[in-house]
Length: 314
Image (cartoon, rainbow, N blue to C red; front, side, top):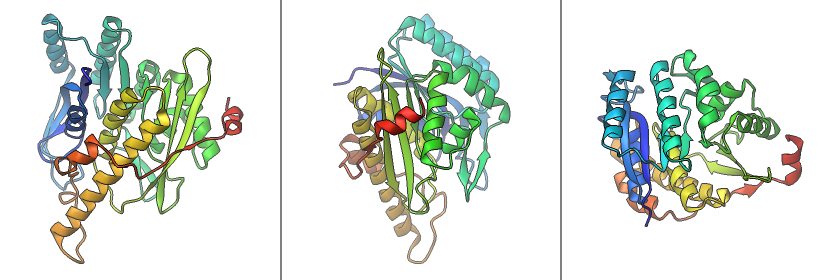
């Protein structure tokens, strides 16, 4: 039984599953103790026509953290971070993570650099642009596992990824910033029928790396919160399979496929024949997916990328 403790700093919504609402439940199901701090607290995610709420500022997070520290309960095995839209708070998070790493040198920091995504072929940032250099210069260097989507990876590396070779070159640039494990959670390189993900892990000491490609069939809808779920599952399964990124990612993506298919089918049943589900119908069905999260039936298989492709980007 896992006795690891995770500190998760992400967004929170009252209605739906994004940020901590997407991350905490699966981590708990998989045996982790989770403490969480909400970087924002909104009524719902911002894809809805109306939303409102509060953005947590530096003073708020500092009060929470300092009180935990005064109670001597800040020994964490993992830190997971996601959506943050304030540069001062992002820098405060960096400060906190550095201090936690001093307290526990074995701590693993999993960073989902939530900055934007691609819709209809066009990338768009949904956080202020001033956060980009902070992610690149201050956050990535202390991250152990980095999980950008294709658009975020392109932002951080200032490169384009229009084919696999460019994707691998981009991953190499991300490694050079600091993270030993880089996972591009999704890319458009699979065309109109699938998403392609890439994973790369540098072994300690010998410089060798494990690199894999994983194809994910498109379910048919745009799901909000799926990236937050992805990062949480990656934390959990890399913990259980620390030396096998291929197997860990197969379990992550298999879980994702089951959750998204169930969400899609329940949304379609909710609106009825011939009607198109909206954001409210497509909120992730996390509770109903409990069995898939705890024990995912494997439905995808990753490929190991040939050594020659690795050598070309070294």
